[in-house]
Every structure is written in structure tokens, then in C-alpha cells.
Amino acid sequence: MTRLIKATLLAAAALATTTTLAAAGDRVDHRQKAQAERIEHGRNTGAITWREGVKLRQEQARIARLEALYRADGKLDRWERQRLQDLQNAASRHIYAEGHDRWSRWTVLPRVGR
Image (cartoon, rainbow, N blue to C red; front, side):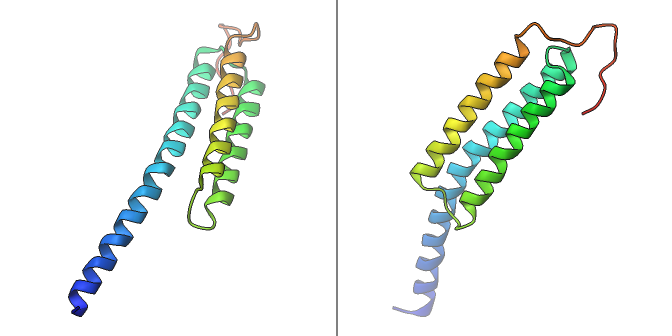
């Protein structure tokens, strides 16, 4: 084979591999973003207090750090992806619970903090 054909095949294989890895990572990143938006929406409406927001954002940061640790070798295997999904499911339940508990910001008070 000529060098051009080998280079083309190698580039196509690399593209297919990175596209598959990116698709798996996009789902994790999209869910993290959606959960962050849910937290901020709860903070804006007053359903989530300042302390609850801090706690929920810390949980999101822990998940992001674990994801970065898993991605350090360049890929997410099935077990790692499932572990991240389980943690995100738990975080989603926590966001719901904090938004629907009896604690809320007084409506006459402005939103303070992050």
C-alpha cells in the first residue's frame, strides 16, 4: 500500500475512535450541565436555599473530579460510565429532594451568594 492510503486509513480509524469516546462523554457532560441548571433554577426561585445549593454544587464537583480521574487514561469503560450514571442519578434525587423540602428562601429576601 502506498503511504497515502495507509495515512488515510489511520486517520479514519482515529476519527472513529474519538467520535465514539466523545459521544459517551457528551452524555455525561450534558447531564452535568442539566443538573447545574436545575440547581440554579431552584436557587433563583427560592426553592433551594443557599446552603442546599452549596451542598448540591459540591456533589456535582465531586462527580466532575471523578469523571476527570476516569478519563485520565483517555477512555471511559462500561463500569466507569455506569458508576458516573449511578452518581448522577443520586445527585438528581438530591436536587429534587432539596427543591421539594419545606426549606426555602423567604420571598421578600433577595438571592444572596452563588
